[in-house]
Amino acid sequence: MATSEELHKRRVGAVARGVGSTIAAYVDRAGGGTITDVDGREWIDFAAGIAVTTVGNSAPRVVEAVRAQVERFTHTCFMVAPYESYVAVCEQLNALTPGGFEKRSALFNSGAEAVENAVKIARHATGRPAVVVFDHAYHGRTNLTMALTAKNMPYKHRFGPFAGEVYRVPMSYPLRDGGLDGATAAARSIEMIEKQVGAENVAALLIEPIQGEGGFVVPAEGFLPALREWATAAGVVFVADEIQTGFCRTGDWFACAHEGVEPDLVTLAKGIAGGLPLAAVTGRAELMDAVHVGGLGGTYGGNPIACAAALAAMETMRELDLAAAARRIGAVMGARLRAIADRDPRVAEVRGRGAMLAVEIVVPGTLTPDPAATAAISAACHAAGLLTLTCGTYGNVLRFLPPLVISDDELARGLDILDAAFG
Ligand SMILES: Cc1ncc(COP(=O)(O)O)c(C=O)c1O
Image (cartoon, rainbow, N blue to C red; front, side, top):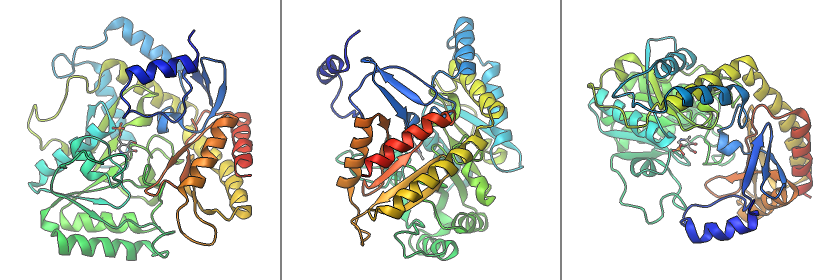
């Protein structure tokens, strides 16, 4: 087998430079809470393929379901010749997502595609053009979703012009907005929408209940409910982007549930199918069904192999109670991170929920972001056998997203490496 070094050389000559990788090691196998490269080096996995392998890599039920489906048929296109697993995934999403109302779902391939379709549905149902998004938001890399995403480098730089009718308002970011309470932060955003856009022009308000790429920003309590209430009164479709927060990651099936918020539409992807590409929009039947027949779809959306994997992944989440596992991981990891923060003045904040935790790194005694120190700590983790990711508008957030099936021993070893990387 080729070594990681050999594969990296081949990659440079074959793969476009614009596609980056966190580590230069090439994977041979992965499972539970570890990844092993072709040279036999092992990393404890605190990334889960960016919050995807919630049920672990090659989870037994997923493997079995995929194998069985591949042998039956690989693709017919649901828009041509439908099949049961697509319907079953939609039934489960309708039942699992917050809100006791009648729902419908549609399946797609990627998170960005789900977000694009949520915007299409909201515009179609309301007849309004505008979409409101937030500072630090991340919603994808396609043309519309680049416009919805906040950060220029690397996601948007020189890729414009971007789609129109997208308006950005302030997020509740307690560390950086002077600790505004949720209601006050929401009032600030709502005033901006009403004055600068006009509520009657807004089709959708799109928000991550906890921001992902933007820095694991957890809004102050009350922020999401206040926006939800305003959207209802203004006839605006409230869209929760649960692509990173969904499927047990934050200790509940969906992060909106923590404050009892019921979105009109939810976008879903990542953890949904144990690593196979699948995404969804789930929401109020009257909005979803407003769209004419043929208005939604795509060749591969709801591919039968991905649907089989999703049914198996959701079954695994129930069977192993992975929401409880996320809460347990969060308790263990949170305690270790707070201990690091107590001794290291570079840690301005430990935040997140369940198994979606992060630390924000600053120049001690200030709120000045320190992306260089963040990168150095992350690199030290990689060198010592722990796969970590960074994020944040300022590149100064270390985030932790272990698979929810990580063992206690793997978690403890990973946290020891992290602890040592802080020095
Ligand atoms: C909140 C959120 N929305 C949308 C996306 C885009 O998903 P995808 O990369 O599958 O297009 C992501 C991916 O990181 C995300 O975290």
